[in-house]
Image (tube, rainbow, N blue to C red; front, side):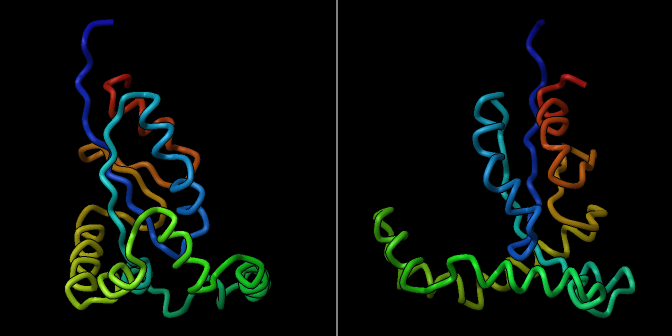
Length: 152
């Protein structure tokens, strides 16, 4: 094959999305192995769901799913001390990261990113965009990578 045009993959993820988590855990390795570039795009699903007419979380709309998710979260590590230790092990300043992540400037960037997701027609997470092409869900990651490499 001759040289293929390579477009970056924009990875749209939501911090509270379990399927986003699955993609977060594998996208870097998948993209690196393929030689694809990834642009990370965090956003908030709440405003997007509200625009779709949902006035509540899917975890409240479907009680069994909600009970399961709350129990699942209880089983995960969520202790601030554990996070601080992980960040310290990575030679990062936990206090500075916490302050930065909670800053009004960072929250404004997240709001702007959410508005961009709306303009791009993103309706769920995770989503991948390559140019104007949208891929939704964890499973289409490989297809998005192929699309970004021009293997369409």
